[in-house]
Length: 97
Image: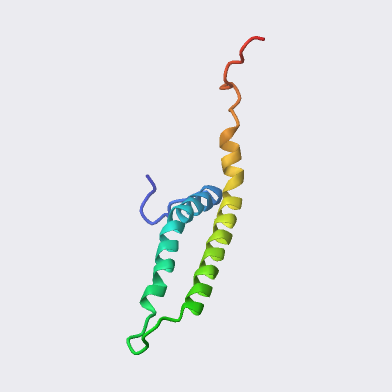
């Protein structure tokens, strides 16, 4: 346990990986909130909603979520590739031919 007054050291790589994993977990929640916003836009004084603007907004949010998921996946791919490789000495036994 660190002494009082000393900050806890976290490795930069593992800290960044954990924040990217947190972002990947929160991306669907952010998407649901952003997709629900056009329902709140309908002002009381107009009888019909502006579907053109709402459709463009939903399309832009959809493209933005795809792009954000791409960037998160790209940042996490080296970590996920390293986890798939067997460690030295812990390789699974091979079947005889």
